[in-house]
Image (cartoon, rainbow, N blue to C red; front, side, top):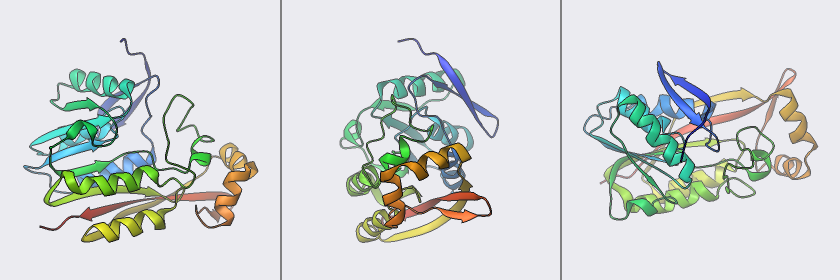
Length: 242
């Protein structure tokens, strides 16, 4: 299947091409990359879960001393795009198509970089991050994929393994973190950053009944700063001790 590039994403001088129907890296992706590459990955096996265009795995292969890197996504288009980027950049990465850990039966990793969809569905469909052709399926409160990942990841982490878990205040973060703390030995906040809504996007959010209920009930959190409305991204290091 031919790939048509519709956008490019640059990180530390590495250019990643994004094809039609593939999730475009955003600010959460950037913070996740900063967190993952802030750790010593020497000799580690790393899985980019929900790889999209492959940017996280590509950056790990390019800028760390990880032993081996793999990536997977539920989208066939995404995996094709990730493979094409790896070929173009001359990087060796094992990319596979499938839901969550289905492609990795019996495979164990030192590090899992979680990049599955984690935005409340009513918000996701208003933003430009999730056009109709991009799967979100994170549920009304945005927790479904993150919780499924946390529950399944224990069977694919080596002793002492870690998950880099990004969360956004546009999901029920408290619910996700409650599960993480129940299942894992340590949950450590690494990075947090606030971002302003584009005014046109915020107007759509404010006018949407489902979004308004999520905000009013405190399930998702946005805060005013001056004339802007802000949302947060946080990246946690979730550890499975030996």
